[in-house]
Length: 448
Image (tube, rainbow, N blue to C red; front, top):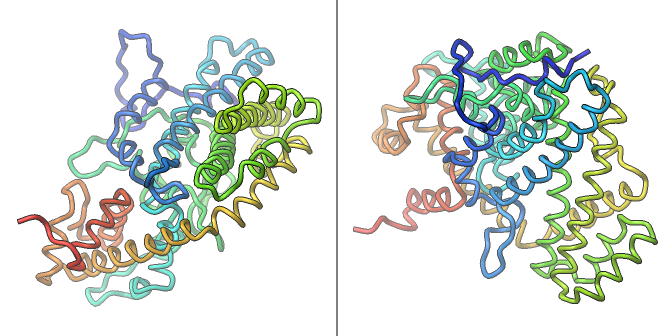
């Protein structure tokens, strides 16, 4: 059984041997939040696709606005859970339990840091480059005798943004400090939705850490007392706060995609209102309609409905977490919080997902950006992987020299060179990736 005293630790990854008294009012977990807000990888999220193509005349969500909204919902979930847990466990009053809201909001800020350009199609483009594209050749022994291990190969063919986020936050890049972002152990553990290695991912691209970061996660999990479920390959029970981060993401993803679809006229006003109203009882719906008589601006009505649904889902997910606290702490809780909410909102949420799948994610604009992203990332991967596997070629040298020195692109180890390529490409914004693709293809030239 995991325990809250051990699960919430202010120890910082990479600075375990140092401890300094700080003369300021911020907690260590608030420092995590601020450190992420001011970081370059977080800033780059403003130019990464969420679902819809980046804005023309209508501003839709990108990865940055999505992450900020998830952090806001995550803080509410964390604060509500912390308040209830303290009433249930008054002996924990002097622990870090009151900080759950700060921890969850910081983890929410970081949850998408590892996502490549062009949304989920970017992840798919990377994994399929190795499983069915030109990267297949890397599975075999190379001319110089190097060969990837089976687990390293699984990492590549299951490339996952969540595992990449953990790498960005913990890996010591060239010239950078030990411990990556040097976040607290608890914030880092709260980000890992799938706390197992890629060899346990099966047919899905879902896992929590690459081979290169396995030892780091093991260290964090041991310190926090996460339950070890399997040693080889490594698998742990989730940190309890992962459920709150996941719930915040589930809530925002669904609500904001519907609002964006409304703004882009993929959904009509009536369709949007109907989807959102379905979460509430007849009595509550009547109250909402009365509010519409006061606020007759349609966009404001949709925003009001959306915020009301988010409030309802926060209450529901908080209730589910508290009802199942013992299962969560024992590592036996299965699924997500959103799948255990009450019948009426659960049915409305399920219907929202169906509408999103049929009308939004398969809309022409969304598919077009996914097709373009797939092509761009596949091309960049092909050229960069060729460069690091044949670095002696003249063209390879030109490409390698273009990569930032923080990436270990010239490592003597094949897997590390491939990872450096993935670090470089996954860190790109949509605009940067498109620009580089055009330049490499000769479609555009730098100004002379």
